Length: 206
Image (cartoon, rainbow, N blue to C red; front, side, top):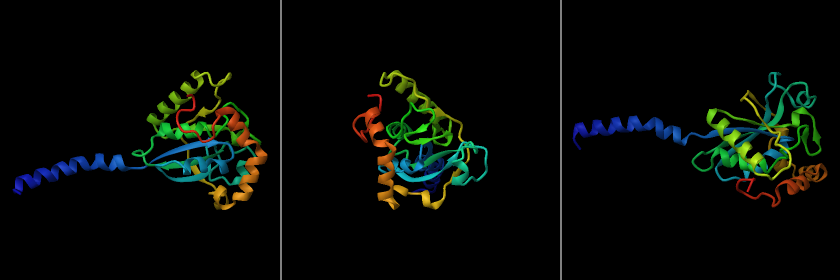
């Protein structure tokens, strides 16, 4: 291979490297869907999701703890941060799973969990995510599935504070206690009434 050709190939690789690196970079989604114990399982099951983490976001208290957040005075909501491979799953598909995991008509909490820290919300991480979130919510409202508007808010991205270790992967680490919580909170019955077939994939307005 000639020296000139080698230089040309090297320059081409240097030019393409940023695009290749960017394409392979994981993205994150931050979603609030009530008690965060129930917000890991739906996303852990999705192909392309690399990691989920529970925490608090959207409020004014720095580095809050669980017992502060549940007072409702920190402004934070319980949320899940989802790290995903955009080459395998996109943000719109993440939102499809999100809608089917919540009651988007409840302005005061989720299922048996009441209070401002249990309200549902989407926290877009950039302008592209915001556009997708707004379009997704608008499509759900136009679908005619519900006879009242979706109240899930689309909020500005905010610092995400990781929750205490005892909350992470609660559904896996304490399966019996988690099952008892789900049963007594009325979660499954309400989701069935709202969405029909549990865990059905695809746009929830279809």
